Length: 91
Image 1 (spheres, rainbow, N blue to C red):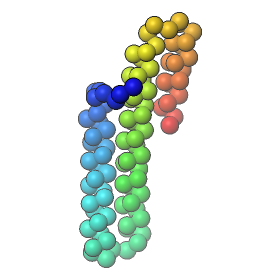
Image 2: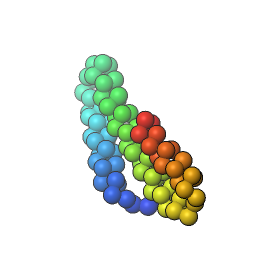
Image 3: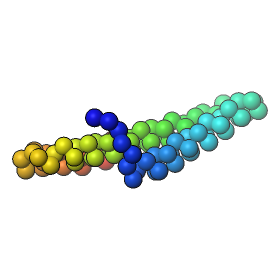
């Protein structure tokens, strides 16, 4: 199944732009000889921003992909799919 743009894409894009800004800051900090603790903190921010963007993308895909394909399924399967979609918030 292909990935299609959804209303979550602006939010995901914003997260990735935030990561891009943090990464640019890390590169500048390296060039400026900043302390390792400062670099580690910024790199952590890059990882978190990318990880959050990835989680949001996967959750969004699961919700839209399953929503479209579950319409023709019996109610018990649709209920299971809804339960699975609900648990993705804990990713």
